[in-house]
Image (cartoon, rainbow, N blue to C red; front, side, top):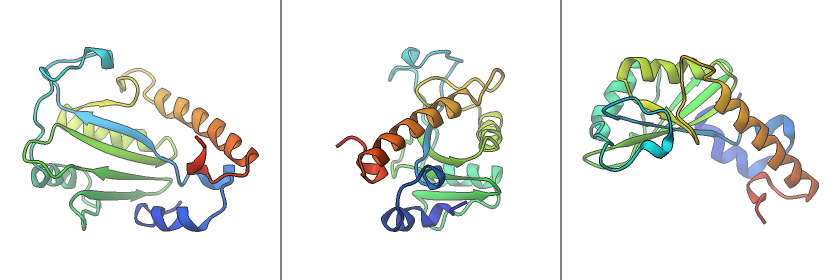
Length: 166
């Protein structure tokens, strides 16, 4: 497993294969604070999105949940665990309304996402709302399927993984 701090360097050096691509491309998950439970992304609008806090407050919250998270760069934290890594992207705003996570690795990462949800009440979403009580792995599994499809096309066309749209 490539550590979160090494991703950018690795991307520039390595040849794309299905074996190493899981370490490179991330499943992106966003956390937001909402006043009530929503079941569809379409139910979210500017009127219901609440402020999570400023960057410093969010870093404190994430450090309480994950004492081993590395926020050497306060805007881009890294959590490296056995089998997965998560990068935390926190905007430099006074009133942050969303935190984006870049998740790589195995299904154990879902436990970390659930821990954030359970301890903060924030809503997790990718293209859909992640329901931690019913098949929370679904989004990750669907993303992996899409990722593998895109990588196969890029390899077939002899392109780098990040050039799949060309």
